[in-house]
Length: 221
Image 1: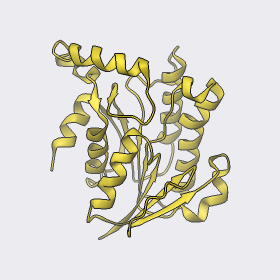
Image 2: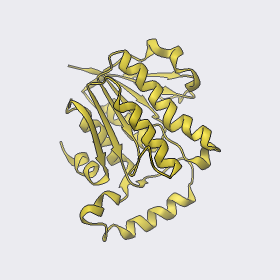
Image 3: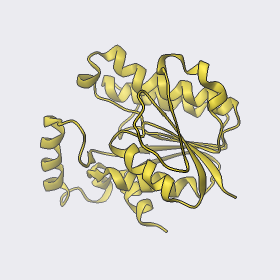
Image 4: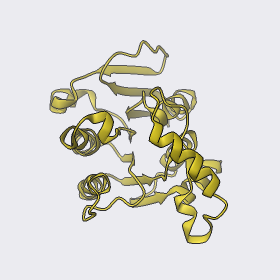
């Protein structure tokens, strides 16, 4: 019953947590990670490929597994332009998904954003929504979209805006109740755990999970 997991974005905030969960799990006997640069990480289960994300089609033969987890994501500030942001948050995830679906990967699980909508007037949310729309049409056994609110955790790079947002969201969490609970900030490691837990349910169809639900799923065993 052991499976192969494929992970994109394993060096990021959530992806790094998810990678460790996958490597420590007895569910997966192989974990394939696609990265821009070699990380130097070594593990008996891990196969790491440093690739050119602009030419994903060149690596089709390497995309072979059961569950694909996508934790790719950036900010417009870090990307430097809307065009580059769109590549990272729309084109790379959807291009990988298209190849994975054609190769028989059963599940695709991806981090999106709360409020994602292809018709949004906000560029960030519109891009996330466009990606979700592409995925919806692909022939996976299941597609799981995770829409967290602000992600909490220690990033490799300092983001002043997000740090200020963390303080505000932590203070506001007490009043974000009822239907507003989905806007509560959530720890990245909980999102990672929820992604892993959902993958083990082997569900059918298209599913969307927002922060409040993600938090509940993360604690389930």
